[in-house]
Amino acid sequence: MAQFCCTSLWFASNGVMEELIQSFQLLPSALSHLTSAVQFGFISGTLLFALVSIADRYSPSKVFLLSALFGAFFNVLLIWRMNTIVSLIGFRFLTGFFLAGIYPVGMKIASDYYDKKLGISLGYLVGALVLGTASPHLLKSLDIFPSWRYVVYSTSILACMGGLFIFLFVPNGPYRKKSQQIKLSSAFNVFQSKKFRGAAFGYFGHMWELYAFWAFVPVLLSTYQSFHPEYDINIALTSFIIIGIGGLSCIIGGYLSHSYGTGNVAKFALFLSGLCCLVSPLAFMINTPFLFIAFLLFWGMVVIMDSPLFSTLVAQNAPPKLKGTALTIVNCIGFSITIVSIQLLNILSNHWSATYIYCILALGPLLGIYALGQSKFNP
Image (cartoon, rainbow, N blue to C red):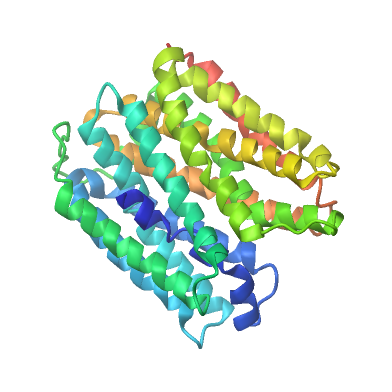
């Protein structure tokens, strides 16, 4: 619940992007700029948190609470009537910075509580992240608020609630091993293990595709509707369902990993999502909205199914006293990659046909499968 509430901050601006563009007279490119600002803030936060081992040296629950409160504060500043594209990018950056104390720290807390069933635990946790990320689209689609600003208010209130949930009800876990000192090299020494590198590089390939797909789901739907104007699609609600259904697949993936092996299920999910990238141009030719949306729903499931599995592999192959640092630095690098893929899609959309640009996302799953194959994880 805490992870769901707090990660609603992530796509708060995406959920009201049209209104932000109209209210502050922004260019359409604001979508990629504001999304990348959150990612860049998250990267900066995770890098700092990893270098000084914040989650391993201090109580993760307290770090989570403070991060949630600061993230909620900078998120609500989106409603400031004097905003410009510069201030909006700044506020999204700071929101992303404090998300670094929420997502990877939440995984650290889970790894402090679970050992044998960590895959299932992280499946639920990342599932909550997915629903939280999608929630601004749902809030927007409900059409119950007199203004888009109430969507922003709601996500900030949820984040504060999530921080309090963790602080009040989730103390330090039984498997927590506290690190006593700062070792700046620790964040990079974890890569000395071959299996850790395999898990990390598999995750990097997965991240190349994931957030670019999520950010462009409304664009995918708008593009399809422009090709088939006879159909009317509720883009906000459909975007929520396409992104949110991934929460279910995270949980399914967690259970499957105990029967078929974490690495095997991750590779299979990467294969399916990469296949979706490659066949996406054909999907726009479908003259039935139901089938097109079904295709995106399937893509929305397989694109995220492997995320908790990679986090499990990272946590299991990191030194026990550096689990939090390992998860954080891998997140840092992974989210750096998302900026490149999001901006690349933005650039390609100005030069290529809108139906072909998503094929480039298949590079991530391809490299991820190769990395997992090289590490030869046991079932």
